[in-house]
Image: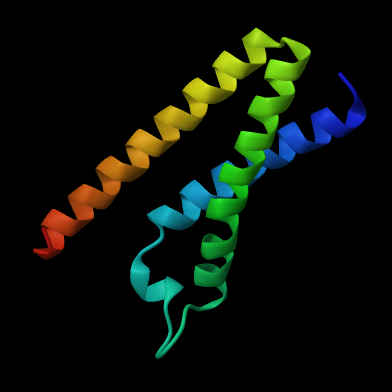
Length: 98
């Protein structure tokens, strides 16, 4: 694989990790009076960006027939997604919103 692939792959994992950590930070630190704070904006930008990079890497893996990386990345992405949804549901139930 080329250097561009490795850089994009590392960016995906970094963005996914930072996005997940920002999800775990309480909401009062991610929002200001009328708009998100810097942490909120960072979370708003990194979450869709990690999904876009994930989609791009899927296309590259299918094109290059790199099945191992495709499966590994997809499993990690799904695990983080499931944990994020479970945490969101837990917080919603705890606050009485669900």
